Image (cartoon, rainbow, N blue to C red; front, top):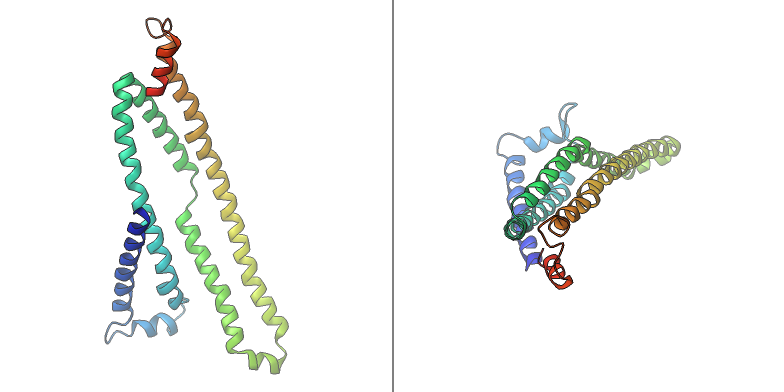
Length: 220
């Protein structure tokens, strides 16, 4: 059911965004398509790729993010109500304060993924364009013996792409390492401590039977 919803949403987003691109790209009497591809030094590279592949990737990402945003909201409400009923407001408020702190730290260490992804797509387009130009001018290159210059150009484009991918991977690893420790390991220790407070504290479950304590942990 969820996969069907995501697929349908993706198709609708792509249909609307592509329609908007076509309406503006081929707007009557403005010659946007000509200016974007042929005019000036600030022309848009690889318009065909951006309107086709990039719009499809954007639609897929948008549908996935939107669908995954609904489940945490439901989990948050159910978890808050049940935990407050069993242990009062102190435990959930403490956990939420920690998550707020962890989110602030994660935000500071989070690399600009949007800019990195855009730069990667730009470099991919330049690398693809270099191969396209070689195919277009292959006859001229063959007669003039331009294999070495063309090889240098293509290799340079590919090297720039690889360096950017490696940089992105390194930044992503460092950010993910911080996020995992803050949101998984540290919060697990805090959660276990808070859940165990009624068992360890005076007047709590410290003198209760093992069955009562077991039932308490099961309910939390």
